Image 1 (tube, rainbow, N blue to C red):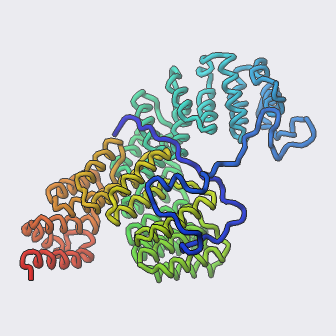
Image 2: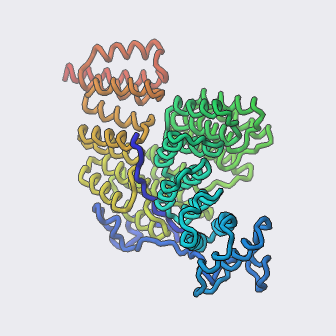
Length: 585
């Protein structure tokens, strides 16, 4: 893995407008629709939305708690602050524009600076906090970084102001940063979804002999859960916690269960769940919802329903999040009728479906080819007063795009921007997949270029979309180049990555590389699933490796391969194809 990855902060979309129009799904609802070109996505007639939130200026604070009085209570100052700190804080928030923060802080003892900066940052005054930090450094120099609590506080101030590069530079300049300083930057990087940067920083922290605290480990585990780190690496981290006598808490156990999600490690998740209860921690909604998600991804629907009932009996009633997790698992497995029944069940219990519920159903109906039903669900969503979010628009873009209806797709894209949203990485990945499925390699390259122009750095899903897109276009070498770039970027492959690469190798009949990839999966503890074995069968078939097909077929029929029942049908289809190729006519 690369030592550091220069991730940029993603664009953030402002909140949708107060009144949302009924968005158009058909091109005749608009003036003549725009046809797609790789550059048209950024040259839409709609301007790129910008945030309207304003940060308070010195001397003109927009604090809703402010009263007409000039007393301390007007600002609800923390009672733990010393008198000089309270006066400095009040002066910073109330100072006229011509008053310099340097003048205000000149009489403040340096030991009180962390408390003042923390109060400013925690009260949503990042601009004032940043100005105070610069003034303090001008007054006292960088020796301030030696003060207890000052360095982590300064890092948090910079991070809240969106200055992660400055926060990283500040930590690098510090002589002997402690665990709290590292943890502050780790948390900031994690909140910005820069998980690979966070993990690289953690490795530097450990290499320099700084002992992580519990909160540090928990931040790293959260990053692990988002980056599909192999389970053996997760266990290594837990062993390090135990070795250094760092006790696991409820957040730790919940994060461990979340680490099992991507690879559907239901046995491991169940074991963590049992250990958590044995350690005296009562599962909360986060615990149950994470385990529900693992069961859903593992297609263990009966166990998921049983867990839902356990939540009810245990006084932890399921929420819309719980039901959404189950609905998602049913939809992904094509069980749309059961998903609809779950939606009716939650409504019967007074739990209103939210935008995630509707968007999940729209996506599932789309995959099942039920376009009219998908659009009908979207109309129901609007009638219920539920606002579409960016995921909804992305689903609709995919709905039209995979069918080659690019004018309709661009109408939805315009509606997305009219609603105040900015295309995100999923929007770009969807467009990559859409054009890849239609064999439009020029458009694939064009979208990828526009994505990078917009400031997005490729993530795992982007690489998977590119691999699949180039594969469908018959550009197998290009697909493998993309996979190599992903590995060089320090991004761990997960099951979806491996399946995308295996599918590309299968199309090209590259069975030897497919076998090597299977060996790599086993080494990294990523279990091949039904799709993985199916791709391997197709690779053998396309390469006319009948002996290899026969050996794998025997394992499938002998039930030595997991998910063997679903593979039997694939095996029959592949055998039929080989026979037709061998004996045409």
